[in-house]
Image 1: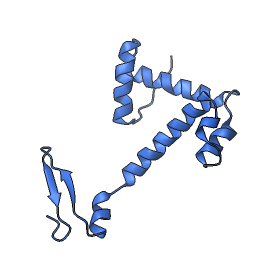
Image 2: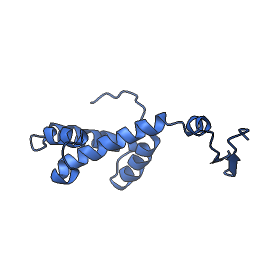
Image 3: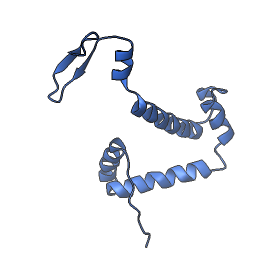
Image 4: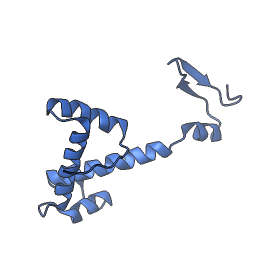
Length: 120
């Protein structure tokens, strides 16, 4: 029997695994494990050109010029890159440094305007 180790995954991945797992008669954990195995095999596949994947990620090759397996890996990499960039993004700091007003939602979902001059 396989042993398990606790790990953290993003909420959106867990929710997708819960939904798809329900359709496939798997728990969310089993679905994540299934997806991980598919990803592992795809990356290890001799039918996947890792050189082409790297070239697309570096901007040296066009996305449409590679096969669907390579595109799947590239989309996953782009998604992770976007998630990391979004996590580091602090728009409040950027707007305040530029002395620009902005709007945001408060905890109740109401729109709040933040004026550049007074921070209110």
